[in-house]
Image (cartoon, rainbow, N blue to C red; front, top):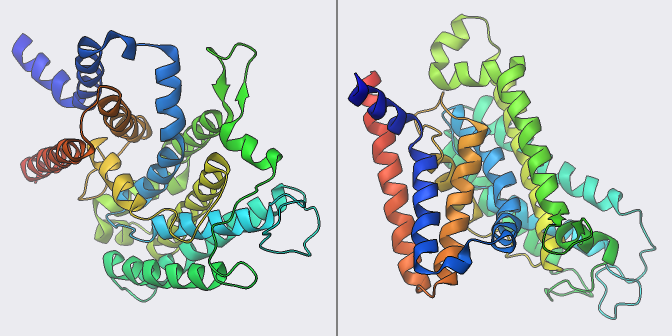
Length: 336
């Protein structure tokens, strides 16, 4: 009985066990890794990835996928950055644009992400195109659209810089007096988003419908769930989250180009899968997704911290992803 309990506990909490082992392993090699500042830096670097992964979780739980996430991040980063440059900056994207309220470009960028999500949802739900193909098409199209916008004169594909301080503060500012114990604004935003997503997942009808659709779409249809409408809502929410992540990424880095967000969707999918979101749909939790993001944050930051080559880091990440998917498929097969 004790062995069965241990096995069940290990199975249910494998993601957290892996995270603890990673941290302990790196700390044994270099004890200075265990520090408040290290944790803060990992969370800072992981914040935008967490928001993208939370958006991706919506899609994966319905049994779909979204390859356009990274390009939406790039589009919204460019949109927000292009309108929030300092008026004294020499190479402004819009030379004659006056001082805008910071939230206007941010809202416009998030709406742009939402509209791309709506397009994805329409193609998947109404045209019955498989999510992989639908979002592959929008991924290419959004990148082309973003590149055309980015190439507008007088910018002509030059990196967008000189962003306003009130905007960059969202990505680099801290709350708190003491530098060691201060908390970055971007981390607070990511936590707030995670709480909101948790509420949607667990306390709303949309969340219940999402799990039902991912668990068995035919049964969801028979039970009276408006599957097409719910799928469109879900893709719209995901697109809006990608848009927010793009805005914060521009604020964090102090600039933007049309190549921002490249391959971010793969990192988001990997974090979700490692965090227990089933590739078969119908299963996934917000804490699991956040843990998956932090695991990859620890891998990226921690292995660099102890001087491990980035190439080895890619191998380790690949092994973790394959192991997580294999474990998920075994559970799915056993359940069937």
